[in-house]
Image (cartoon, rainbow, N blue to C red):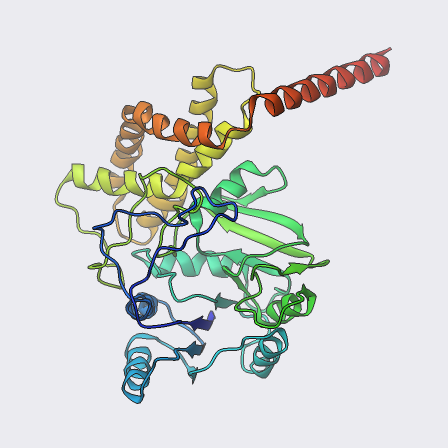
Length: 403
């Protein structure tokens, strides 16, 4: 059964300001959004995130919440919120959070005998990743598939948030391979791991022990300046979005087709009720956009030297995403009685129809990103020459081997 290890440090009770920086983000403003789009305090976001977890059942729930501006009243509010919303067998709540490597390692070591050895642990290191799916059953099924009860689960990490990025990695990185419908796996992860993963407590201890970090303060194990040596983890990625970053994905794209976090959204997300067939199609079309748009963009970037017509390359990757979408969303929702078999038959055709109907305008958005991320012409020419040289070299080897 899944347990929770939730940690956050909220600096002050103010609106969640835009983060400015230029550390490889898409634009210097890390998470740009419309000026009048509204914002929430970090504390308000934390409340919504805790509410969003109410549909998930936890064995053990650990909260390390460092809120410097908190009062006794705020602490009571948080404690009541957790008790009312989180389902657990055991709860541990602390209003401080580890901040050094030794503190982190010591904290998780303290719970080593409380978390079941082979049970998965939802490791949360930020306050702003709400559960955004409308059914926990699908999520719990994926977790159990990756972490079978009573089996050796050490070294496994299942990515749970930033779905567009991780799904793109799974579909475009040749080192990932599909082990079951919509579930990808990559072995021998050694040099880096994001703090957006489900793992066993022993795996988490292993990660902290393998961390290389020269500083004192560290907010999570993927903190700037940290690195790793010989982690030897196995990463799993599923092609459905379960959690989403509050600030969305402006740090990796300029496209504005993704669903935006709405301040008035009620958590947990309810099972959708559709007004008509068009409403149903629009809903699932947006799910396809949210989960697979970056996969298509990154595929087009990777295939820039492909000799096939661009349209053919585009259609090939779109078809692949539609197959994943059908299994991870439509078939899963039939299984969980959210839609019927008749709905599935209708949506399989109708959503595909809408995808292709809007594909020109969608590709136009993708193409802008592709152009902005495109390397300079000189470097591009050098890479092209290198690829041609490699191809000629391979052809010569083949000819010699045939002779």
